[in-house]
Length: 165
Image (cartoon, rainbow, N blue to C red; front, side):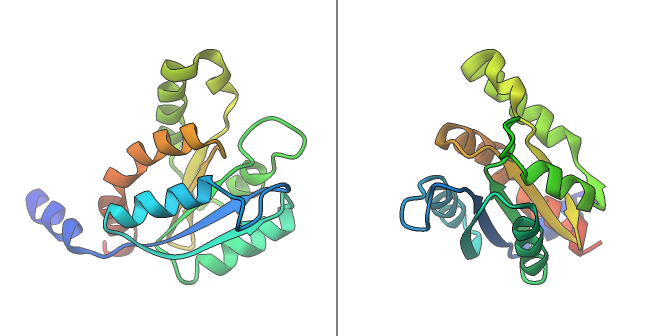
């Protein structure tokens, strides 16, 4: 039964939306969101949309609410630090129906191994909202690359668990 479940998960398609939270980058100047889209598409997943939204709680909440209507997975990049303008985690965590703490723990561990103690300031997290898998990752290119190494292998199995069981 377990092997059949794994085989079934590998057959599903996964639809992803990328949201970049930033007060400085635009759709044209953003590099992290473009990297996310490129890697996700090269990994065989469908990217429905990439949006840049200001660091504003109401805008982030509204954008995520819209995207949960069409996506299996939403990756939000930016707003995971401790500065006064980092709102992504504070906005999304109360919306989570289920928290997935292992993701943030693994990302911080990987970051610690790469850059040391600074990685521990990240509040990267994951959870579910409206049967959609949400990943909230730091906005730097290096952190996004590291996060994708954790996220991409999980996607089919996680979406299968969330939507097909």
